Length: 119
Image (tube, rainbow, N blue to C red; front, top):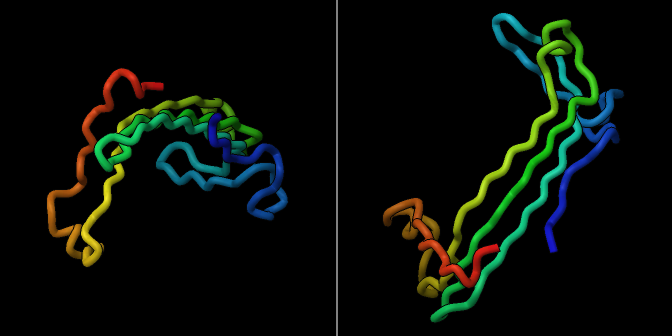
């Protein structure tokens, strides 16, 4: 079952425009975009030797609800992007602190899960 998050045309930032307003400031193309956004995350994991190891897949859809500025109106388009990666959760010593963990190699890389836990 996926985790869903996002918004549609609801005025989530309360500025009187649909969706969320994004101010774009660029040398040749500036203005405001009104966006709807939806993300879907799926994770599969398994418990192995005291560690949870798995894979996460995320899909993000952004839809243009409107735009101010001729350039943005002409060049803006809906988009869909996806990403995936691995993760691992394991216990740390009871006396660990964030500061001490950050002193070690960072970021900690999770090993790729075996084929049986791919989603």
